[in-house]
Amino acid sequence: MSDVARSAAGAVRRTVLTVVADPVIRELLALHLREAGFFAVTAATSAEACRLAGEVLPDVLLIDPDAPECADLAFCARLSEAVRIVVLSGSPACCSRVPRVALCLHKPYAPRDLVERLQGLPDRDDSPDLSRQGGSRSIWTAT
Image: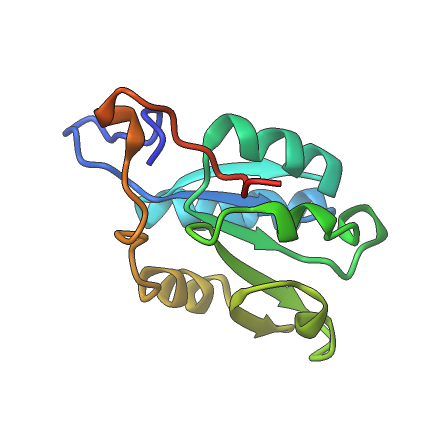
């Protein structure tokens, strides 16, 4: 997990990169995630999310591809399998367009329900933390 994602007590928190075009919804989700103990990072577009993903090394990518600004899902296919992808969509068919979806929530949804579902996702304990072994961890797959 990202070194930035440590609480004051030193406990490691999951980093959630939220990609939602609507600024009110984006901040509402970030607020709920932070209150639940997640390290929340937000992006308004797929391009911004792609850039941020390399910086914050998210554990979870939360994306709403219904808006045109967030519809470019090509970067999702390049993410490491350790990154859990959660789709928020008004269209059930949308979830099939995103590779390796761990969870698909259909609109309307309650932020509280979303947080509970994220808390239920398994940890990515199958991916070693290479930074402790003198290496560097990447969220991108080898091309």
